[in-house]
Length: 223
Image (cartoon, rainbow, N blue to C red; front, side, top):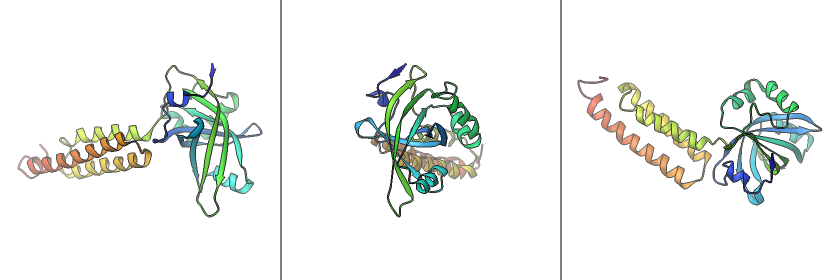
C-alpha cells in the first residue's frame, strides 16, 4: 500500500545528521541508466540529499548530457546482499527493477520520485536532491542501513576481543577501533554517536595499556 511521504522518511530511519545507505536506481525514458549504493540524508521539506563523485558512470553521464533531473527509485534495506549484488552482479538487480518498481525480494521499502542534480564548475562532486513522491512499505518496520551504527557495533566487538588476542595483535585491534571511529565521524554528525565511539576508543586505549602491562610484559605472555 502506498502512503504519503510526510513523516514516513523519519520512520524509515532517515535523518539530517546521519547518512543512510540505500540502493538508488535512476531511469531515463523507462530504461535503467544507473544503479548504485548511495548515501542520503534528510533535508528540508522532506527531501533527501546526497552526492555523486567523479569517476562513477552516472556522474559521467550527467556531465556529458547536461542532465538536470531523472526519475529514481530508492531501495531501503538493512540486508547486505543487495549492496553486494549492486556492485558485483549489477545486471541481476537492474533486471529486477525493470520488472517491478519495488522488488520485494530485495527491498524492505521503496521511495519513488524525481532526482535533481546540481553541479558547480571545478568541483568533483554533483549534489543531488530527491523529491519523494511515493513511499511503498514491503515489510512492517523497514529501516535504512547506517554505516555509523554498524561501525559502532563492530568497534564494540573488537573491544571485547582485546583481552584475549595475541600480544602481537593487540595494537592491530586498537587500530581497527580507531578506523571504525573515523567511519563514524564520516557517517554522522549525531553527538550521541560521536560521544559513544570516542568513549569506546578511549576505553580501548586504556584496556590495551593494561593488558600489555599485565600480560604481554610478563612471563605469562599470550596465555
